[in-house]
Image (cartoon, rainbow, N blue to C red; front, top):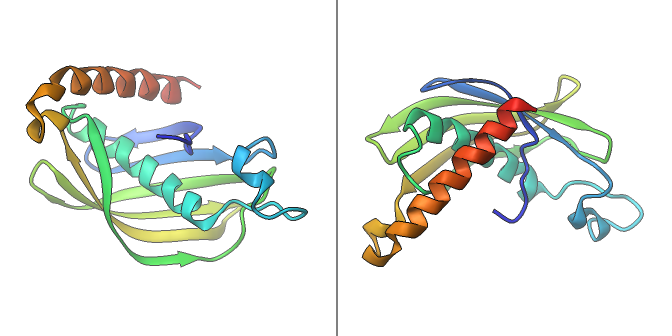
Length: 157
């Protein structure tokens, strides 16, 4: 993941829900170009915050069995207000439906000071790279270890 768009996981209940925090700082690299003189978080990165929070819930629910989580679909996506430097977005994601071990559907939203910024219904898929390319077993192991370490950091902060 190029940008870590979850700064802290404040609560998480396996198989149910996650609440996370994204603090938007003027130091974020992408704000220099979006938009000059009036920096706001790009909508696609607001969506990515929802995806990343949901992915942490997915990983915990599956006991970090899979190395890779990808967004398969975003539906009912709504951008309701801008997120600007100094804002703290509270991200909430609830597991809505689970299709086996590998596909999960979530209802996710972000808000700043009680005002909705973004919301969506997300479908995420998880898998191991070795399921598609046998020589990637070690990569799976390394990615899972890294995700567990990052998860522990996000929970500890």
